[in-house]
Length: 241
Image (cartoon, rainbow, N blue to C red):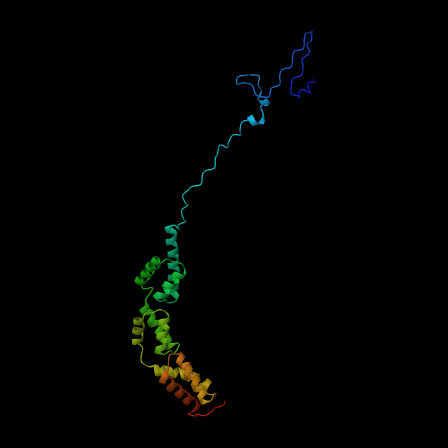
């Protein structure tokens, strides 16, 4: 039998150079030799006997069982934000008066926390930057002298701005009781444009304008009639221009 017919794994036969019998071929080895044989080469080992690759020295760190803490804004940043809002509010107060309620609403819209709003408003009240009584007096003067508003219109205007009823009453108490004269002055300024209408139309429109200025009821009726009479010379019919 040839070496190839014997499985192809036996060693080739050795032919003696100086005669003698041919030694038998060594039996084919299929298993590794016993431990301690020096003639066993590592390249003869099968794939199944090769050592496993060494694991990476750096193992992934296990995920922490504790949840990550929530992001908390540093207290210093909160203070800086409130201080910046206070500076902006103070600058606005230098050019336009605000009531205490208006100041609180503005700070709230800017995102300032409630406790910081209280601190800011308290400081502004102490230094007089916020003063509802003084603001009420200014608004009454403006409403009466520049807008020809009556007491009722002035009171409503102050109430819309969040000024307390006590501050409103105190400001109106110093106002002279001359609503009739102020209403008549306003009506005289409007009567010329309304005199071209018939009496009823002109009267109705003038009473409406007086009512929107805070002069209602019998006061508006009397003032409107007087202003139209002065403009038309007392004529009650239709007037054309």
